[in-house]
Image (cartoon, rainbow, N blue to C red):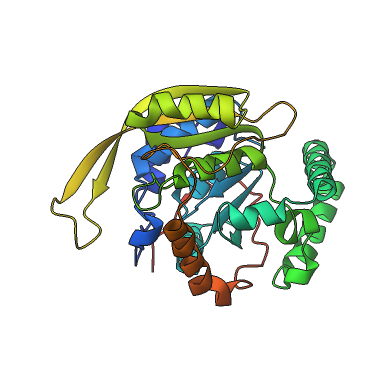
Length: 331
């Protein structure tokens, strides 16, 4: 398999084909599998623009982890996956373990955008997290030209760090216990068919996490509204449709009558506000504009309550720093 710098779209797609989709999809969360081709297209576009290799990437609503896995295979320095569903995080970890060697993203349990907003509520902590990431990148760059003895020392240090990663208290505050920041965000958010406005809430959250760019999939039918909302309400520095794609949705839930449905989707690239101040609130591209209803707030509260007992389950720091050549068989 070619290294990430020369990996072709078909090669990446082939490596993603065995990633297991949701085992018990939750209709309330609009959990649908992101196919290998769609995920490969997203990462190929991001990689071509220099937003993946050597970068910190966050996958919001990580699900089974196909976008997070694609990011690691494409050369991301570190990947963080966030999801409110502990079952999805368990599946993501299993999918990552099926590669040889195993992939190691950081997994964080939390709701989007509520939990992420709490993680990023302190501007000083956010600034410190950005500074820590910048220093980490400089160390990584310096390490690439170090002597053999220095490389050995770094490997030994990494081994000691790995031993402590099962203890959440040993993790750097800017990574797993503190703010969520990344150079690039990749995501396939809910379209808002179950909860109006969730698509734009994800986007607003992503713009607050990303330092450089957000790559996101949205229904083509919402294009005009989404562009207007992103630029004029959320204050995105730019909003560009990179590609028109077809999203093949298989029959997942009992109420589905067809074996599969094809939905036209846009792959967007957004840039966060230059001053870092994201505007806007609770409107969504799916359905009428307006504030979130009482019923929708109650629905989200039920989801939060359902998963509240799992809050600290995914606090370890499985950080994937190595390049991974291929995928082994699933046991």
